[in-house]
Image (tube, rainbow, N blue to C red; front, side, top):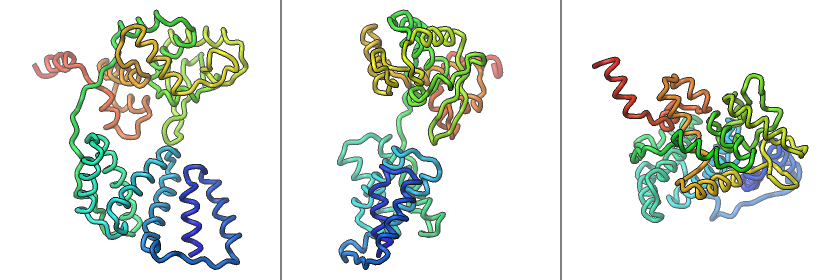
Length: 328
């Protein structure tokens, strides 16, 4: 019973502690509780096994390199399912999960994309249980991907990019737009960049992507000029590549960049100006100009090539030209 108590405490604290601190907490609890007898309420005993399995799954995903935000979302999603199904994990059936997903969508009026995200997390969880021999077969195997509409998301035109550049009143904003447009990096990767991460000679920088994986991204000559001008104009001693315009000149955050771009878009009468749209624009252009999809996958830092294909919407005119070249 002591192990149950320790697992539940660590689970409750998992979103606040990294792997090393969770290990230290476990050792401390084991030492303190060594001389004590612990009992568990009978009404909660039936849920102990499920709680323990969820905890072990989250620990496994943590070892794989998932971020704390992702781990928290995984755990929240799985525990919501357990509350909805009201069964032990090992006794949960395909029919239970289908009923839960249907109820989940109807009760919240949620989109198919959201429901499929939940299905994917549950699939990962039950597949792990199967791999670890806690269950014979995952009940999610027979629940297929939720079909969603394939909407072609907008990208920036050349004119829009130039209009944004021309309207920038601050060197920082111009450098930010160039950096996003030429590298295709995530905004979360950009805000973590330091000056020392940038190699101006090679026009490249090292970013820390999802799963704490480093990769090299590249920028063009225009970005180099504007970024150097911005850095030379700064009077602060901050290591961060992009900082606030006023003292104390702290590192710029994701929400600040999103807000700045929205304000710029409203001023220019442009809809949905968002940092992620630069990434999609770069991916689409790279595909249109013939960049091999495997290289684009590496550039964007995608684990699966399917994700890269979702970003790259090939223009129909290019498909027509390719058909005439290779077939017609």
